[in-house]
Amino acid sequence: MPDFLPSSQSSAVAAFFDGLRSAVMSVFFLVLAGTYIGMGALTHSVDLSPLWLALSTVLVWAAPAQLILISSFGTGGTLIEVAIAVTLSAMRLFPMVVALLPLVRRPDSRMRDLVLPAHFTAVSMWVESLRLLPLVPSERRLAFCNGLSSGYMGSAVIFGCIGYYLAAGLPALLSGALLFLTPMSFFISTVNNARLLVDRLSLMLGLVIAPLLAFWALPLDLLWTGIVGGTAAYAFNRMREAAQ
Amino acid sequence: MKAAVELGPYVTLILVGFLPNEVWRLLGLVLARGLDEGSELVVWSRAVATATLAGVIAKLILFSTGELAGIPLSIRLGAAACAFVGYMIAKRSVFAGVAAGEVALLVGGYFFAP
Image 1 (cartoon, rainbow over the protein chains, first blue to last red):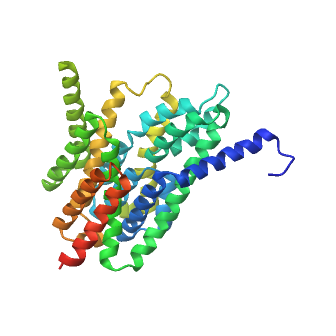
Image 2: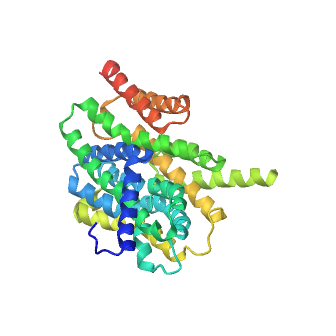
Image 3: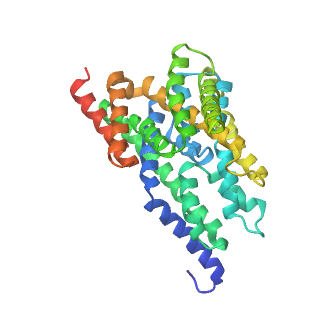
């Protein structure tokens, strides 16, 4: 850093790069790489461009929503159906933002400083932020969090492009294996996150209900999967807690 | 998606991808004060989100698109089961699980696919 920078400024920059480095070193870097290589392959299979994928990664920045959006170009569905499925998959971002911002916020924080961390909120970033931010001095957390998130988002954009061009030039079996990366990394990381009974039940019910509804060709099958499966799991958990 | 073809992929991205997704982050930003992680609304919405995501996973494995559709369903399901077993055997390692699933798919696809 040039000498004339005030020390506080240079250490905000340092905190940003600390965050960036934490992103590349974390377990989620590889999961993200696998997910977005798969996403790139999926994008290729429905004839969308790599630029479109990069833009959707920066703007949407939520793999489940991107997955619903991209696969809808292949499997069909009306615009309103896709929008509802996307918004349902994004509901989980709301409590995440609510839990994250108190860690980043300072008494002198402005609303616009928090727009970026709120936009960056996604499963990988959220899990790592909640683990690492308490170790960072509070005046550096915003910069650290933005660095961590930029690291994740940047690598997702790069791996998305890699997956796209890999899928374009690979034999069919290997392209198939790339496409398989997305459901596999989601499946296993969702299993890994589901430590509570209510989450495990929701996962199992979702896996069973969605194929049944899709097989019967019911409209809004993902919407009903989420509401029926999630509410049933929640209600079962409530009754069990009440019985104890 | 017929309507998506008419609107073009970029307008579709903004209208049914970006906006319905971002609205929850903005809500979280505006209403962040007061709600705690253990509140009933938060638990329920996480359950709905998890079930929705599980539905997406199941549909991607069962009704695959592109080259994955060329690999028989029984091999895709078997590979998903291998991923789960690999994850459990490797003391809950996400990498081990995903790697086991991928290897099973490649081996199954190479030797048993038509």
